[in-house]
Amino acid sequence: MAKNSFNKVKAGDLELKEKVVAINRVTKTTKGGRTFSFSALVVVGNENGVVGHGLGKAKEVQQAITKGIDDAKKNLIKVPVMHGTIPHDQFAKEGAAKVLIKPAAHGTGVIAGGSMRAVLESAGVTDVLAKSLGSANPHNVVKATFKALGLLREPISVARTRSISLKKVFNG
Image 1: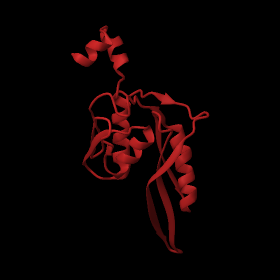
Image 2 (image 1 turned 60 degrees about the vertical axis):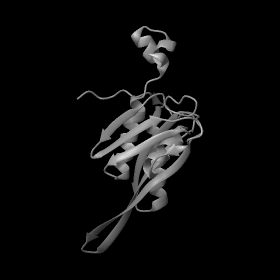
Image 3 (image 1 turned 90 degrees about the vertical axis):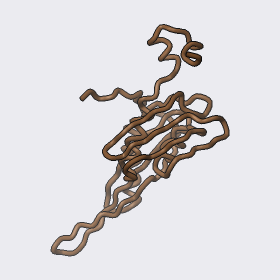
Image 4 (image 1 turned 180 degrees about the vertical axis):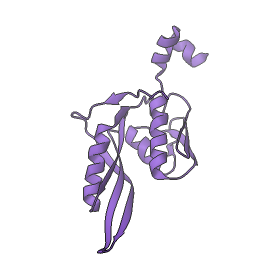
């Protein structure tokens, strides 16, 4: 299966804000007793079209979050945001999680569930309708949302690919 080539971005000197989506406590039982560790799912973004997600695991919560932020900075993508919304409808699937995102009129706000809301707000989308279908597992919902955002295309690139005017892309 072909790997999607998303619009990768380097962290460089971007002003990124982080949001913790989920923290999971994992217990391992050994003959010496129980050992606890934590995993943190983190989303980072500059609220201007660049967003990334990462997973960090450690013995303490704060270390797991720090590792997650570092991992998220390595997985940044560029999202086409036009007038606070996305250019077109998009559906994506990851594992059993399916997500549907649709553009919305100005003033609608981010209508989305927890995991998707964190990703969309970090990307800088202010008006969008989104629905998480299937599994509610935060890890898969975040990955499916990223896949959907990565598949979005800007109207100017569509016009260039089809060799038609930008006006014709919008009006059919």
